[in-house]
Length: 261
Picture 1 (cartoon, rainbow, N blue to C red):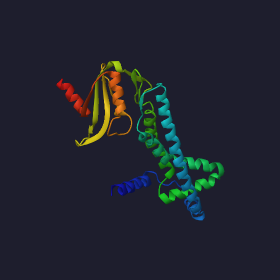
Picture 2 (cartoon, rainbow, N blue to C red):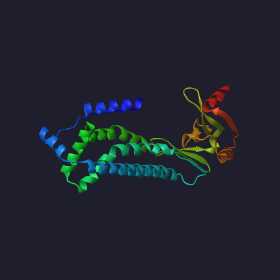
Picture 3 (spheres, helix red, strand yellow):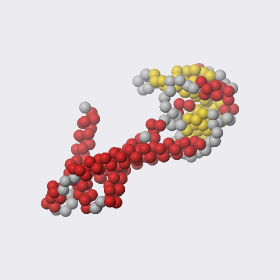
Picture 4 (cartoon, rainbow, N blue to C red):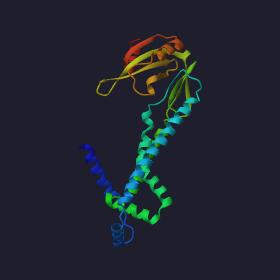
């Protein structure tokens, strides 16, 4: 019920604030739209929108993943590497495809077609929707796709690389890397998951390493949710830090145990 209501409300707002722009006199405008049949052209445009949308999403997603891996590769040889969940690289490609595929289609079409016909087709589609679709998609690109794109680009440095002597951590929105030597670690904890706002337990297994300078590294900060920690990772951290592994249900339990000490 909510989705159809939201769609109707959105269309109502678009028709109110982005009405169809009339070109020429009303008589000329209506004549052009009645005399020309765009039914076959519409199918071509719909297919083009789908093709260019998927192509845009795939190419941009591939570039974002490659950029993230390239940034992490600069750390050199590694024993373990943790990269962000693949899901975060789909938000901008998805919204970008929705808002920009129309512009891409019109641009490529303008290379081969008369500008007048394209303008008449755009006016015809606007009459079908009841609002200025071109301006609506441009506003969507500006207010939704662009902020998501900026936020996604700032996430490219995110990663953790476990090397022989330290853990290298890339943080959000900075090119600076944090180096955490194993020799400075003073606590090693295996965590099963976390509790959401309602208090329900959600499995997200990971390792926590606390360092002497107050820094804390979490293997679960990057990657998808996992119900179990890789035993080889646990053995590697034990060997490098020389610490025994504590086991708690959630990270909040780590703080409680620290206070008790």
